[in-house]
Structures are given as C-alpha cells and as structure tokens.
Image 1 (cartoon, rainbow, N blue to C red):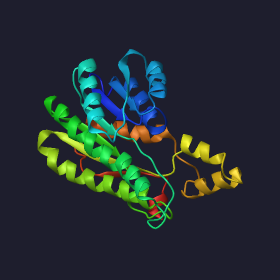
Image 2: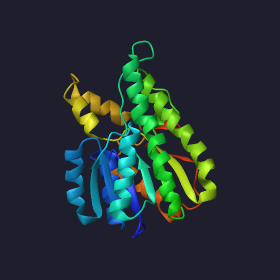
Image 3: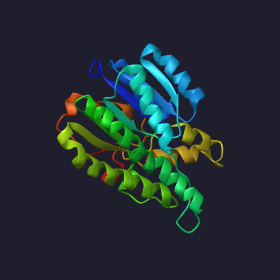
Image 4: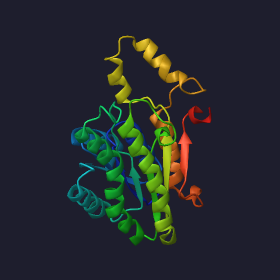
Length: 250
C-alpha cells in the first residue's frame, strides 16, 4: 500500500493512462479524484473503483473549473498530496496547415492545463507538507513527429515546464517529474483503426516504431506514475522518464 493515506487528482482519467493510473492508485491505498471532461465516463470509472474514488467533470483549460476541482478534492478527501497532469489532445497538421484555433486548443489542453492544475493544486500539496506532481509529456518532446506541430510543441513545453516547476518547489518537499510515453494502445488508436484503409498494416507500423516490436499499455505507464508519486522515488525531481520500448534509443 505505497500510497496509503494519500489523496490524488488524475486528469484525463476517464480512459487510457489516466484510468489505469487511478485504478492503480486506489489499489495502492490512495483516494483518487477521477477528473475528466467526459463526466459520464469518469463516473463509470469511479464507480468501478469504489468509495475511494470521486468523479469530477472538468475542462482543464478553464481556471474557474480547476479551482472547483481542487476545492471538491479538499472538501471530499481533506487535502491533496499527488497531482497527475495527464489530460491530452492531439491533431494532425504542420504549422502551415494548422488553424490558429486548433493550435490554441492543443496548447491549452496539453500545456496550459498543467499550468492551471499546478497553480491551484500545488498550494494544497504544500499544506500537507509536500508531495508529488507527475506530468505526462511524450517522446514527441525529444523527437520531431511529422504533421504534428502543435502536439510536439505542447509536449515539449510540458517537459520544459516540469524542470522549472521542480526547481521552484523543491524546497517545499514537492517533487515534480514528467513521463514520456511512446506509442501506447488506447481509444485514440482504436478509433483510427476504423478510418485507415489497411488496419493490419496500421497496427504493424505502430508496433514497428519500438525495438521491442509492440505497443505499450496504459498499465505500464501507470506503474511509472506510481513510482514517481510514492516515496520510493524520493530523490527524483525535475526528470523526464521515458517509457517507450526503446523508441528514442535509436
């Protein structure tokens, strides 16, 4: 029970990495707020986790809603120890053919959300004597990806922001790290399978990106989130931990 007595907020927790993280946290003794813009799905996840989980519908790009999220967490569970900034969103496009509105949305969901959740979450973590923030970045933070300009920029920003945040709050016993997942099987890819002309070739191409010749699972990323959130990683802060099956080692 590595998180016994801890309270965590996980954004983008209605599916994928967020849902897997919420489930693992509860298993390890934490009380968890399942935060997502899809309240119906968030409630479904929370129900499956029992009395130690609370669903909150939230748009992570709106400050007033983040304030409400943090307030609901403190009201329900008494404080906040761990913040996992997992909410993310991506689109296709180079800088030339990405509309400004789409650019802003990608930056807001992936990067501004980290700023807002941390702005209002970190003071509550400080009240508890310290804790951890884990930001989900991407291998896109270190490797360019064609036709993904906004997403690459946003995830690169998450990695850089993490380092700055770690320095700002180290003296408060708040450790802040990021994770760079590789290709992780998710609802996003399930939807894409319905759109591509050759699903088998599409899946083969995804697997081939990693030397281990497979995609990762949300549970594998959740395990790294748990490590960075618990006391076992007490000397780790300001780092970006890559979990990508060897993709960036090439």
